[in-house]
Image (cartoon, rainbow, N blue to C red):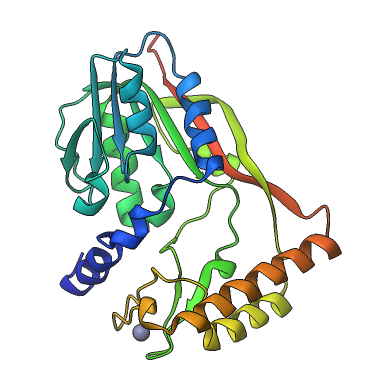
Length: 269
Ligand SMILES: [Zn+2]
C-alpha cells in the first residue's frame, strides 16, 4: 500500500463511530449460528479481521477452547475484543503454518484489492490445520454502495467494498480446502433491481444528501461526518424510502444478506 492508501484506510478503520455502535440483532444471530456450527474437534481458533470481536467474544465466553485469538488491523476495533488480540496486516499473518484448527474470516474479503485478496487467501490456508469459515455479503451489487465525493468527484464504495462474491466464487477460493456447505444466512433484505435508473437516482441523492457518516474519500480524504447532520438524515431517509418502494414494486426481488461457507482440509490419499 502506498502512503496515501494507508492514510485514508487508517482514517476509515480507526474511527470510533465505525466500531462503537451496538451489535444489531441479525449480526448477533449470525454469530450464534456460526458458533453452533463449529466442529467438536476444534481446540484453537483465530478470527482474522475480527473487528470489534462480536464473534470472538461470544466464543471466548463459552470457555471451551484452548486458544482463541482475535486479529485485526484496527487498534480501535481491538479495544472491544476480550480474548487475546493481535494487531497486524492480514496479508502477512504472524503465525506458523497450521497454527489453528479453525481460521475464521468474516466480512473481510470484500474489502481487499485483488492482490491483497490473493495473498490473504493463501495466508488463511497456510495457518489453518483443519477448517476455515468465511462469510461475505451475498451477491452484492457494488453499484448501490457507491457514492460520489462532493469535493473531488471520485466514485467509491461507502464501506470500501471492492469485491463481490457468489456461491461459485466462494467454492473455488482455496486449493487445499473444500466446502460441501455454502449457505445463505441472515435476514432477507430487499434488493434493488440492477437498473441504470436506480443507479442514477442514488447518485443524485448522494450528491446532495450523503447517506453515510463514516465514509472517507480515498482520493482526497474528505470525511462525510463533516456533512451537516440534517442533510445526512435526509439522505438516509431517501435511501430507506427507495428500498421500501423497490420492495413494494418488486416483492420477490430480495435475498439473504450473507453467504457462509465452512471449508475442510483435503486429506491426501
Ligand atoms: Zn474526494
